[in-house]
Length: 494
Ligand SMILES: Cc1ncc(COP(=O)(O)O)c(C=O)c1O
Image (cartoon, rainbow, N blue to C red):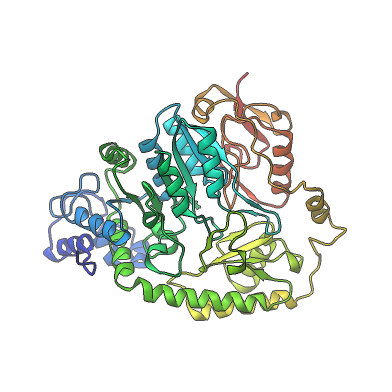
């Protein structure tokens, strides 16, 4: 196929060129009815191509023309048999994968450090999670991937599993040994689903980790908006081989799509694919070089550590995405949250992620050398500055807690009900203190990175409450629960 073509974007341009007199949605009628200040800011062109499915423009729900061709081009570019464009992110991708692969009561092996949208998929599908423990890295205070050994053990312990689901890469850019995981899973006759939300670029550069499609995952998802150039919310779902029921997959994808998709978003997927297929390697080479240079220079700053290839071979670290620059700031006496806040307040720099020990700066094909210089210079200044308080001083409260292990990620609480049963059960709110021992009816996930401490159906343990209290004190946002400040928690009625 001709990867320099953008059939869907072209179909929108042709409509605009034809000067059609529009009597259709969206109601702003190519910007004419739009509030002027907004239109002026976003520009006429984006309004002109914000159209609706119609003859000549194709329909994302039932593609027969240009969207079909655009999806086929994407499938070819990624080495998939089929690719579906999604406009509600990898969030809907996770939900689509689950709804396709598992039925109520089916067992599916999932890592605990999955994004919360995986839990949404469990609630919707009614499947039973068999949690796999990802490798925990105490020194960096983060979870890495699950290992092939963990997958093999889980398959041996649960021969009735319907599917294995893994996350690779992690938010921090750590990649799993997907080729080996695929081999083990397929040898056992099971489906492999991969959440590759953070790796839409992997397929286009030999120095990046092996992509999920290259590893032969039956289903995989990419957030094209995260590391490539599509608009926010744009993602792709890839399918390979004969193990997945394609008719079911197609109906599921349709169920998750709006009947009025945002067409500029869909076009941005078409264009992002062309960009990668035709110039991906060159663009990514530049990005990788920029990130490697930043990593080296940051590692020369006293008190900072920016992990790189030396991590490969640690449990759960098969490969690394060099474009995610994770900086451990603990040595400066700052938490990652504080460093992130200071970078924003003093230097007008916003990083992607902060946690207790680390910040993560994304280097993408849109990152300029000038921005990289500003980032490095800001870190140098931060390291030189007098610190009012060392958060990790030996006598300090954080260090004491870390030494006592009370800041260790808590053990997975016992599951008392399936996520779907707990989610749909009669519930009530109880105070944080009184929730101990009760069955949680919501997902409680400090964000970032969004890994659930307690999931629907699990018992709220003392350990989980202690951990959550610390996260709340550190100012971490909690995602998932009705009461984000956790004064109350929604539990299953007794
Ligand atoms: C591992 C993982 N999967 C899925 C998602 C959801 O992706 P999206 O924001 O594209 O819906 C995220 C978001 O951060 C994620 O980190």
